[in-house]
Length: 91
Image 1 (spheres, rainbow, N blue to C red):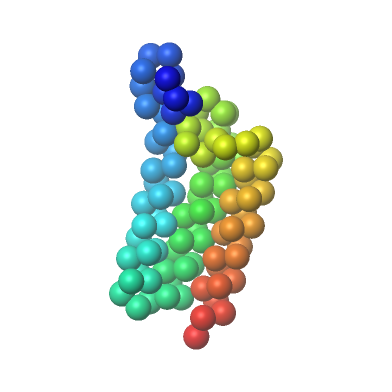
Image 2 (image 1 turned 45 degrees about the vertical axis):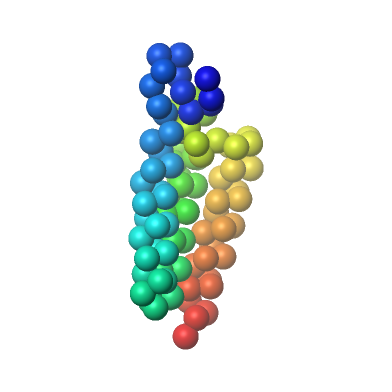
């Protein structure tokens, strides 16, 4: 079984779903021409993923687990800050 499954066969990838939905909503806004708001919304989604990765144990973090907790969280925070800065820099 993949790391997104427990021994019971239950899918544990749920923590990534809310973050991905927020990122998808940001992409929709960007597609509608609202680049600033879309980038900021995407940054919030990625930041939510970082928070979830930081607080959930590895067996509950599901698809957010790639490497060590500190590495995953740091990469997501840097990406969120970059997206937010991009969104604020766009006229």
